[in-house]
Length: 234
Ligand SMILES: Nc1ncnc2c1ncn2[C@@H]1O[C@H](COP(=O)(O)OP(=O)(O)O)[C@@H](O)[C@H]1O
Ligand SMILES: [Mg+2]
Image (cartoon, rainbow, N blue to C red; front, top):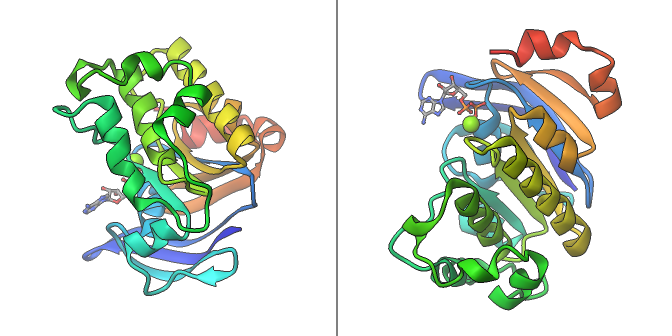
């Protein structure tokens, strides 16, 4: 449903992606792996037209996104949860979530804070708290739920496990997997945390310096242990 063809991206004279091809099927979960600077965030921003200058083709359910601004892409069902989370620290969690509802995709079922609270049991006790009163893990949960408030059909998650304790990261990965099942959500996940990515996706793309160096399922990824040492180890 989401397809990226021969995507080149740059910031001024600095090139970040070199002819990347990627597809995520309807309802699928795809991990985009790669070390810092590999181009993961650039690809996700390219899909939303939120930063880099791009050449190539990006289609959503066969529709070419060329020329569509970020908000128009959001209305078509795309949502990005950015790396830096961007929770409003002086608003409550509920206010943060309600603000995000304004971008709701027109052809998708409406959602509500209450519905999200049923889907994520950890959420209701946090609703009255201010953004700055949240731990890193709680912020990440709120950022994911906020992404879901617009009822997207495709959620792009940029390094949600970054900075989280391992156990908490795994719990959040389970939440993402459950959200996929319950909402029929398609997920493209940028990660360096392999354990997290494995837990909530089926398919893997590996980026290195703006080039794809592997594509396959997790079994195929595991069958080439050198991928990890060459392209992911720090
Ligand atoms: N706003 C920017 N301006 C200039 N260069 C950037 C910008 N954002 C990212 N880059 C460069 O693009 C490349 C890919 O970065 P990025 O997509 O953020 O990688 P990743 O998300 O995999 O860590 C890096 O070389 C990075 O320095
Ligand atoms: Mg990044």
